[in-house]
Image (cartoon, rainbow, N blue to C red):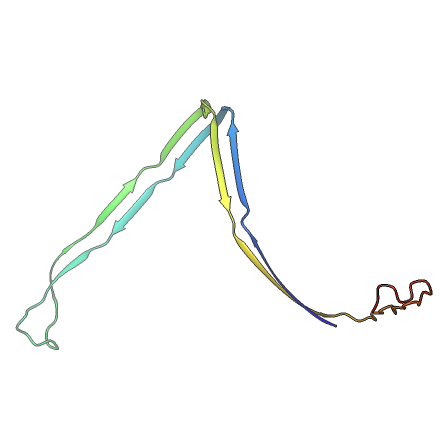
Length: 143
């Protein structure tokens, strides 16, 4: 015997949750020593020429003439030293002085479809039905 089946399952589960935290006390401290040293810094810009173009001359014959220059710029910084000893930072506090509360909600929807086919094998036996003839009931109630 061949068997076929089909089923659809729908689900809509919900999830809800709440949480609360008591105030969180914290304290922290940082201690450090610092020493910073920058050596001498120097920079130099050499001579920068100033050139002039004559507009009515042809491009090939035109040469830019130097009419002046700016230059000889020097910058120099002497060594720099910064020192800080026993630098410290202390902090204390409370996070959420009245507590922290929150909630989360979620909903999900899903559908599943299942199809199935199968084959059942076996033997079905129908028992025989036997009618007995009874001598006493002969002819009564039957015509």
